[in-house]
Amino acid sequence: MIKKAVLPAAGLGTRFLPATKASPKEMLPIVDKPMIQYAVEEAESCGIREFVIITGKNKRSIEDHFDSSVALEENLKQAGKETLLDEINRHRHLAFAYIRQGRPLGLGHAIECAKPFVQNEPFVVSLSDDIIDPDDTLLADMIEIFNTYQSPVVALEEVPESEVHKYGIIKGIHVKSDLYKIESLIEKPAREESPSNLAVIGRYILTPDIFDILEEMPPGRAGEYQLTDALNGLLAKRDIYGLIYRGARYDAGDKFGFLQATINLALKRPDFSDQLKEYIVSTAEKLR
Ligand code: UTP
Image (cartoon, rainbow, N blue to C red; front, side):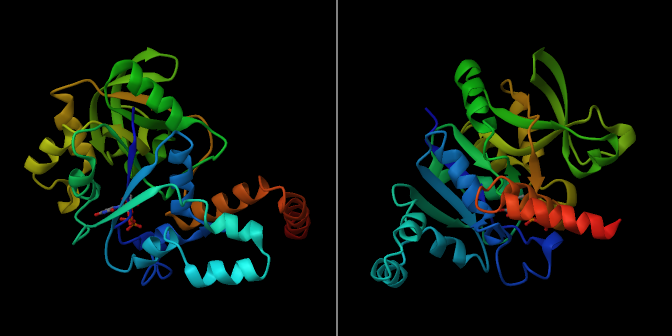
């Protein structure tokens, strides 16, 4: 049983400046929910109830968001706004812990910070700026693969060759349908040295032996402790699988990806979709 999820949220969000100068990228709203809430609800739908969020400077609002807010609750109660009250209380049954990453030394280092919370259990890592279509079952499918093989699983996406330099890319052996057994990983390769077009995206099921590797590993590319390097280290000890995701994913840490997420997730909302469709069609006509 996987019970815990680690949500690294201590990055600087430089691709989204100036919005992220003093506010966390993970709190930017997609329609009306901060992006980190999508990641929490996705994991919750897989039975996860315990979350550790890796935070850093200027990230206090993440803690406030998942905490109770007595004055606001009182106000909504008195105004008879029960639906909104339920909405802001919907995470009450979940447990949140926060660990500060003193300096943003990379994703590998952020995950290493979660060791005291995770201890000796397998766990999910979700990068909340990678938004997975909330109607898809990627994480549940990955957990099922973990349960079958008792091995770490990473989510993969087929990306155009022109984009491999933005991702960790795998070399792997096809197992069945969308499942690969990973042979090696390379972080942000140049197009000509990329072993495939299968890119690692922001969902992982990891086992606690990754911490031993993270602790001993020197910094890698760009002086950061890269998760890709730790996964290569782990491959020397055990199998790691990759599952190709074919649904919609939005890189909402990027400004254009954020706009796409906003439009597509709003189009799925019954309270907005008709109005938004009309607006998009009329705007497109004006642009012609
Ligand atoms: P990103 O590279 O997408 O986030 O890391 P970033 O560094 O904040 O953004 P840019 O590239 O400067 O725009 C993926 C996730 O890992 C977290 C980030 O908060 C993000 O959720 N992260 C990254 C950490 O928690 N610590 C780090 O040292 C680096």
